[in-house]
Length: 223
Ligand SMILES: [Fe+2]
Ligand SMILES: [Fe+2]
Image 1 (spheres, rainbow, N blue to C red):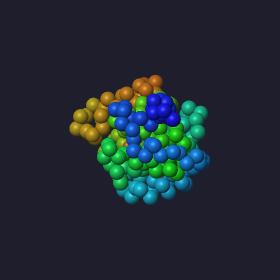
Image 2 (tube, rainbow, N blue to C red):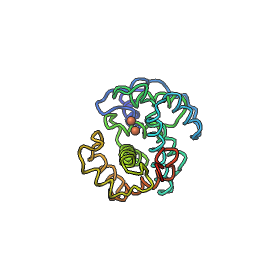
Image 3 (tube, rainbow, N blue to C red):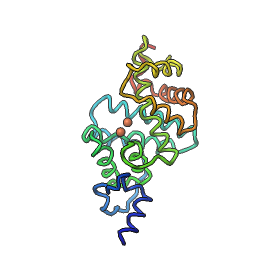
């Protein structure tokens, strides 16, 4: 096909990065198979590439949050959960912005994961050049940093628990610049805005979704 046509089609498929760079591996043709998303396969893939307990807990925290929103929005809870579970699966092996999440998406494509999955995963990295457009993409981004911030806010409580953490206390922590300083407050605010939710409500939603999996996330604390 003519290069210009390929470029347009690739752009529609979200395969061209913002700076016009074609991502490695994109010239490879899709193998045409498609798979049904299921958690068991996603977990196997995640744990093949990720051994760090904190990264696994991060994956599960984002999964709980995104799957919770899927339920709330009437979307496919399992499919959204799988996307969230896999969004950082390549990070431990390839942590630089040159590689993550591009390497992971190549592997997902090879395994037959559909394009809407890889597109959503690419869009969680601001530098990928893939804009957040779908509700899933906005949800994934809005939950990624916030769930980590909520973990941190739970662990500094006397109970070390998410079960007695309230949104107001998270908002207060956001004002403390020294607390979890790596998390950009503006990103947390923007995430809620992109979902069309007041920040406090978004925080409350994510806390309640994560509470459902407090034990798996190690956030029951002493309660
Ligand atoms: Fe990431
Ligand atoms: Fe993440």
